[in-house]
Length: 373
Image (cartoon, rainbow, N blue to C red; front, side, top):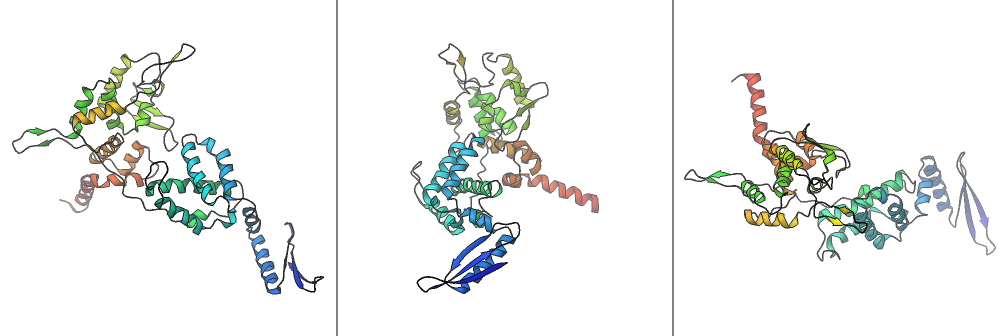
């Protein structure tokens, strides 16, 4: 219970010393000039201790946001090598803005100010204002640092990020290759997919056609394809196993049809000096050994797009194309998410309109079964 003692100081002034002693917790003491303040502090402190809030709040007053960020960069980011460089830069931005504040003083309102500044100031890196997606990535980095400080370090009772709204993101881009079509006279008008595959077949780069067919057939990301090694590809079983993916989970990629045929042919003429499926030029080392990195796809890709007369199309759009073909072939959102390696259905909802015909067929069959033709 809180006990309050009135004290008369040497100068004649009066103060009130409050002692809060609860079994199992260290005693707490504070002094006030007003009895009302002393009673309120004693009441609030007792309640906070009983609810396990007081000492966490005290801990939050000992550490600044800058200290939290420094510890996170030092201890946590090394376990996230792919994000380490970007998230270090993102967290250093917050440190420069509000790093001097104690964690207890970093309120949702202060983070909202940072969020709004992220969206309006000119980035030193690009010379342009940041997009909402970039601001969301900055906030995600800070949010995880707060979560670690709460759950593992005990520096905070709760994260202020919980009450901060993220910027609204535009709808995801859905750009896929067009199909062949018929002209009024009955002749075939080649679509973008046909033109692109023809351009890749005639490319000076021997891997270009196989890489693009693989992307269209599996929905793999460019980095996943270029990082493929022969030890993860099983041509007999028709699959490739990706041990390192964007979401951190192992993913098995089915290989079939044209893509599998091309890989089998490619295996017969593979470069035995490297385990990479699509190596670049050999890099001689000082010790005389030759090493390889994945080939640089930029120049042959741009050349193929130019020859095919395709505009506003990125390599990543081949992944969108694969997802679109899966949807139009009757694949469910859950199946598309599994093929692409998404943990949730949110990312694949952008393809739902493409499977409307399949959905309509399911509803029609259900009605026919219940009510007859």
